[in-house]
Image (cartoon, rainbow, N blue to C red; front, side, top):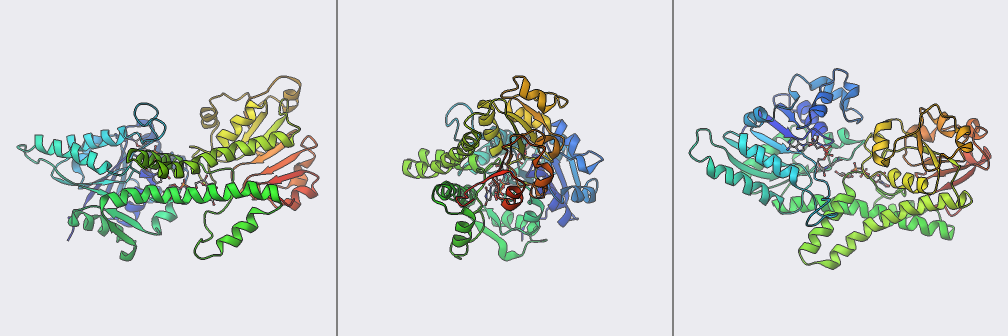
Length: 479
Ligand code: NAD
Ligand code: UDX
């Protein structure tokens, strides 16, 4: 029989903390769920009266926030209070790749996890279950336990002194489908040693997840399974993207190849769509972490195997930018290119590691003038990612041809503005609205000979070719 849980606290109101806690609050009305963060701006934004302006765009999220916020779901900067009240605390903070020191460029930076553990050590009361929700290198639970044990020792004689149990419960949601993934998970993974704490956490999930989908493992298997799961998914994308280049060279078609191999039930059809290269905050970081761990444990062959997955991904992004340049007669200076889509996939406003960032930078290095459109990503975010401010929206693209606007960008308010006088359109995110573009309508607003580059295979080639435009799509050696 697990401990009865009444108050839950989640440290980190990000892409995982926010949606995960919204679903727990929705499915478990008897629980009090407090999401805390060090960022005042983020919390303010989660508390925005207009739920369409919460910090994360995720289908179905705004409705859940509307339903639960202020009832059993709260967003707050009062870290001390909510840690002190909690029976169970989820650590859901960022774990990016280290930028300096030992393991820079590969290992995860655990400073936010460590600071969360220290906050818990300082403010917790009584027996508290601490749940690792962030994706962490194997053995991180050891670090958390050491910090908590040290606090336990020094608080031994105090009234209400805290004791802890640490569990690993990695999150498998994908952005853009987070709410559905949380409500209908393939599995929930719980790693740990203390049976009662494992039971307490599974009872929460059991409010909506069938028992047979709740997998229990030892804590190290749970931590490693999360990294491995992301590595396997990313590996499939690098595999299919590498074959897309071969398709283009040989006259094969990657969509046909994907279908043919995906119908083998041992392979399966998911994650076989060739695109501009995987992005997102997880894949690259988690593989590099796996590479670092393999090196650390003296397994260089394992490290180099996984490192290739990231190398192919970067190569593929450069390859796309290069072929666009070649098709446009080898030079992009004084050419306008409409970039359609900047987020790393559709249905999210997240741009972390988006393939669009590298491809846009490469095109700007070649002297292109980019007019970038995305239905959900802000101009400010694009400027941050490209490390370059846009020019004023009022500058007409005809003026751009006359003056030297090489290597800069402009934010397009709509698709029409992006395509006007453009030499090419490049589709980088599979937003539904791009698959509906009427190319007949826009063809004569572009500068000919004009091109459409579809890195997501969302356009019917016939519609483009019949409109008199040149067409390229990833992995298509036929058209
Ligand atoms: P995020 O950057 O969106 O959010 C993390 C939040 O934690 C930030 O708002 C930050 O201010 C806050 N924070 C950091 N230190 C804190 C502290 N000491 N006290 C209070 N708040 C603190 O990150 P995310 O995308 O939600 O990812 C969180 C973790 O989940 C990462 O380990 C990531 O690898 C993992 N993960 C992410 C996804 C995803 O799709 N984004 C999916 C599965 C797992
Ligand atoms: C991923 C994992 O799927 C999820 O389980 C984990 O919890 C977090 O990391 P996420 O990064 O949000 O989720 O999105 P995902 O759908 O996995 O897409 C990642 C990248 O791969 C995107 O850029 C996407 O466009 C690309 N992708 C995905 C392809 O190029 N082809 C595919 O077939 C699938």
